[in-house]
Length: 399
Image (tube, rainbow, N blue to C red; front, side):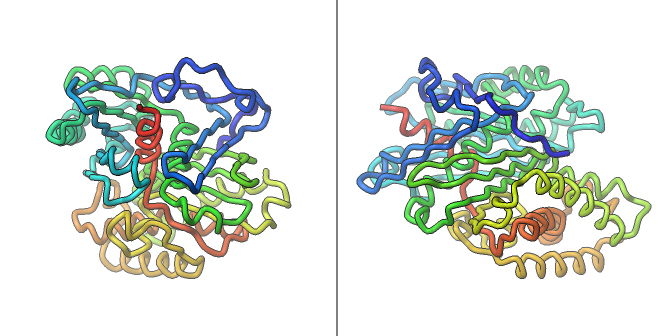
């Protein structure tokens, strides 16, 4: 079920803050959560994004920073451990500080880990399975970071790790076997960096967006939905929700209905997601629903729907509602004709094209439902995400 952000509470994580010793600002103490973002035209490095949001019940665990080397000059890397993959981001600091955001200034390495499959029905993460399935991919990413002379590696983990009831055991296992620190971030922190990444990478287009903006970030194990309003260069959050529902959890829900036919199993998965969306919509004011709005979106389902391969090509692609509906219909027909039972879909499919169709078929109906309820005619795809936002913060917090 959706969880609404709690008012009067702000995120303050020293390990992820560019100024750990700073006292909370007046804005952070206000009842309404706020986003302030300044996009200065004079110089790329003057871009700033300060975000305070309502906190969830999850208390962030661990430390993000690992010093891999004390050599100079310092080089930053960000390692993101998500529900579905292990992702390493390396950037050219000198170029980015001089010229601002450019996809060409990054090396982005990602490998599927399916970490969410290591969780059982009680959300206990199987360490033996994790050691065999996920740890080698983490170790490979760290080796690549060392090959590129990364000195400061910031490592963060998201939904699958947040949900693990034995997360402390998992963190200790990673630290012992991979020799890095990990910070398991709260949903609000995840949304903060996703938004910062989009604004940083879309600087020239921000002025074209509507006054009211919706952000949908659909991951493997959770989905963040945020409504905010622009006033000059400031963004104020009106509503923020987190759903413990993503493409991986929907896949598991689908495979559990092994006795059902494809159409009935898909209808149940769709119905669950749509029920969550309806609960969110019911809490919104009529003004927010009727207002013209832009919507930017992150997630594997929506990026695959662009039909484009690279983040650079996917970024700022606009997808109309009718196009998404057509993709859902075509994906469903292809899946039913080639896979005998939904029960075979719990793990990643060997046929990557079919697996992409499954991800789109499960993930896109949530976007479509939100678009229908909120009168959103099209989505703007973001080719950046959480790790780019964290990289941005660390880049401009360094001298």
